[in-house]
Length: 66
Image (cartoon, rainbow, N blue to C red; front, side, top):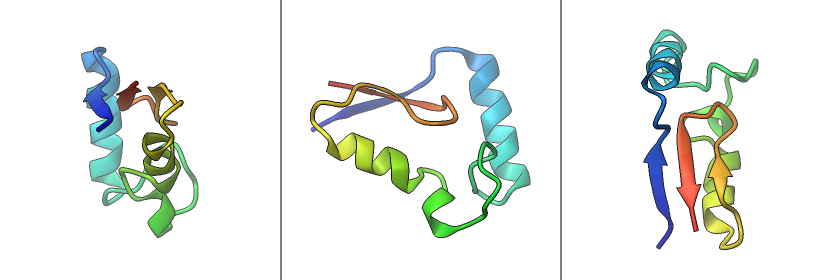
């Protein structure tokens, strides 16, 4: 099972959490407010499913380790 953790930078985490709260749970880094952009977004869920992917989600809130 993939290990997903928050970004170690507390300032980034707080900024993204504030943006999520202001946008009703939708990624603050995306213009469109669609189900695919609801945190944890579809793009990152797909990356989690990829066994070869390691890295941050688009908004840098989460990091997936191999």
